[in-house]
Image 1 (cartoon, rainbow, N blue to C red):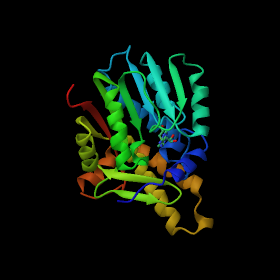
Image 2: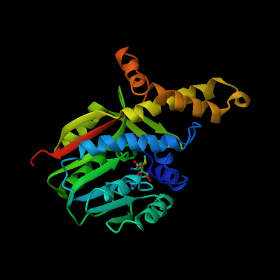
Image 3: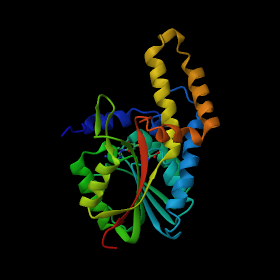
Length: 270
Ligand SMILES: C[S@@+](CC[C@H](N)C(=O)[O-])C[C@H]1O[C@@H](n2cnc3c(N)ncnc32)[C@H](O)[C@@H]1O
């Protein structure tokens, strides 16, 4: 089994510039900053629906929180939020965000060494498991199960592939697992998938990213006009949203190559 090199993962996230597009891997396609805001707002409507049963005076744990846009969102909806981030530069940005929310606490830590000393009604993993080897995913989920309130949920949002897992081994190390692979991991850890949903806002932006990637491959550098192509691609897709993401699916075309899914998980025994 191919393994992720954590030193490289830490180097990558330690060297990023804090921005709303960065954690979504949307920085290099010439998209406007509003693309990140659009995706966040569209996703937050899904998250709102998936977490509507979590009690408002509940406690939330956000692991791998990046600059903290989600932690801030949860702080506006729930009583207490704890956000854990491993990258120093993203943590500093997260801390600034926390300054205006007295119910949002941030901790600079690796999620594997973080020791929860509370119980949580909602645990959010927004693009974290894909940076962990399977053994550590199992260990982390096992640890999280111990601090999940009865009836509480773990909400995962992970990038996925259709076939077998794909591991990128360059400076950006990541493992894209299939939905089935995740289901098996969750079942092995004693979690049931209460709800599974494709992340359509992600798929829309991913269609644009993969289109721009192809453009950059085939067009000579001096003709690439990335800023213009990125903006046109993004606004074109927004015009054709939501039906554009359904077309490849309806035609049985595996595009875009990467998808993303929300998984709502519950303790099998709760
Ligand atoms: C794709 S970004 C997602 C950020 C945020 N959840 C969001 O949705 O905007 C992944 C984040 O996980 C953090 N991360 C990755 N591995 C980690 C680890 N072992 N411990 C703590 N943070 C980690 C990265 O530094 C990065 O901020």
